[in-house]
Length: 104
Image 1 (cartoon, rainbow, N blue to C red):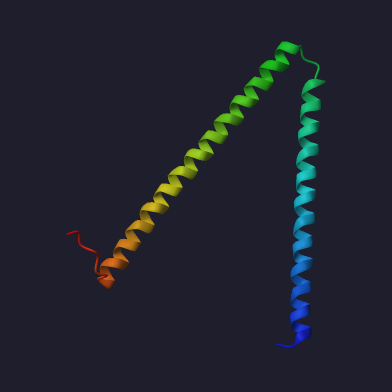
Image 2: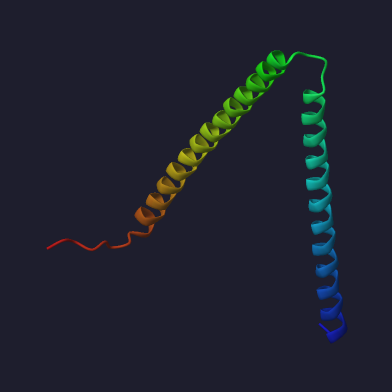
């Protein structure tokens, strides 16, 4: 590999990293703008304050429930993965007949 190839590879990686940073910034900006628009829309909606507060409470509760469910699903998946890895490790150790230290 020539020196120019190495430089081209480094420059390509830098351009890719910059492009990824730009995409992340754009996505964060869009998310922030959407959130501000949603809050503004709720606050200026033609509902009474009581109805608006109830809507906000309901949405917050739904969001918390969604987050809890995703955390539970992630924990379940992690537990299953941990068990599979432990089983595979046990099988490899058993197949290799690795001697274990015995307590005296």
